[in-house]
Length: 422
Image (cartoon, rainbow, N blue to C red; front, side, top):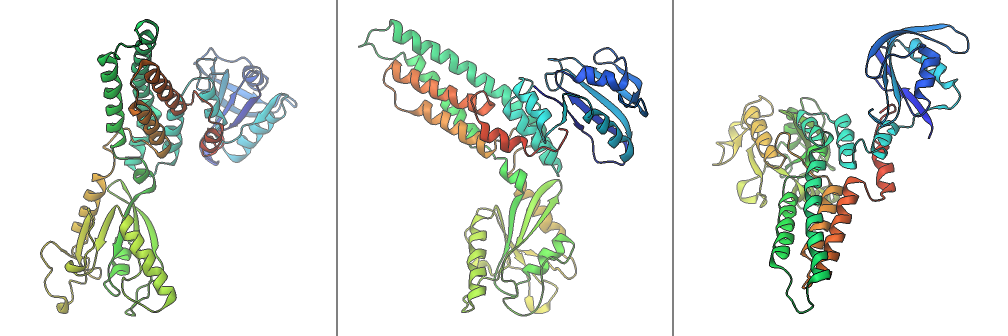
């Protein structure tokens, strides 16, 4: 196993730079640069010197960790240096000159933590999400995963599966062939399958990570692009009084009250002979159908059938527009009238499809494996042998969920999301 090193803090210049070393030669390499190391998990100030020239590189705080009680499960050392570029480059250069050390690949520290049993795959996914989190909701959901929320739940399911499997094996060994399967065993399998179904029906992670899809739709010249610009606070969409100006959709990522939003402007919905505009209209219709929240600027009678539709009476500052129909929000992009109630309504509708604060939200991979485990438990089984096999299949899916079973393609994709030094 190679010994690796990398800058684990942000790019210099900064007040402090954290440089990590992990692997079998971590302590020896650190001694060559910092001299005698402090006791494990104890910080001490040391002079860092180039082991080849003896030149002073910096005065830094040094922390030593002994495996397996470290973040990676290996011997490791951290240098907390001054964060100037020259200092960081000098320390990294000194480490690179030590035999047996190499620069870490992106995500390699976390991958070693996973491979050494310090975290499971669900916690690693949570760490990746935490690094990428841009809103408070994303941060809390990622932290719930990273702190082992799903791992603990899966461990509970696995214990129940083992108990059920043991009962099924006992039935195979001791029950006579013409004896019916123990009703308690069947009830236990059904109860676990029902619990998995309930988890699959919870709000998922994708809207939280990618943003709730809020689509602004309606006929041409209804004020869609102006409304998008007003909500975004900048000119993102071209606005003219010429019908059909918007030919393709425009996406604007936003955060409303900590809720991630993907606001989408679309082409006006109408019959057209213009081939390019017709493509835009088709896309607009598809986006409206797939929207999590649909902001409709057309007439109430023409509104699509959507579970989370917000009817908007746009351009309400114009006398020709008249009063807003019942159930519609009067909004003016020009004066700002009605914008605040509209934003509050969008945020409310978006929160309804997002996981609760700090709740565990399954991503596509996790939900797929839990669904496969549930299907295995629901598979027909009128004797103990079939039930035992179904339970084995379910256990295999949970092993894949936590990373106990081989998932090299998943691992490569996951840890490639991490930054260098993580």
